[in-house]
Length: 78
Image (tube, rainbow, N blue to C red; front, side, top):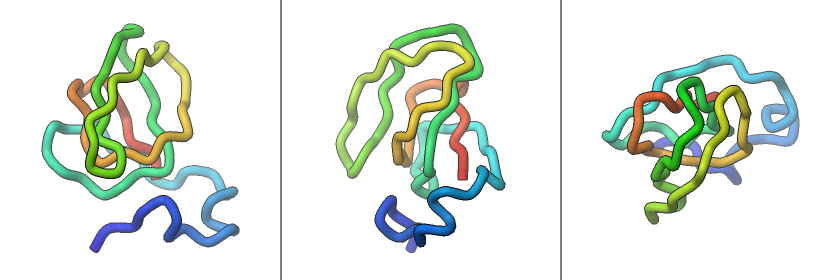
């Protein structure tokens, strides 16, 4: 079973990101944050099993634990 946001230890949650994966529309492991590598846009992320629309700005990192994204311009950080 993939890790959820509450499954990270305090040491893991404050450490630098060690892995980056381009998001897909298929279920993925829950990430610690998302990064918008493409142009700023509204993207639907799956958070705790619910689809939520976010307007993400290019080049920013957001502390959102997601498992899916509607665009491949989003990078999941672990």
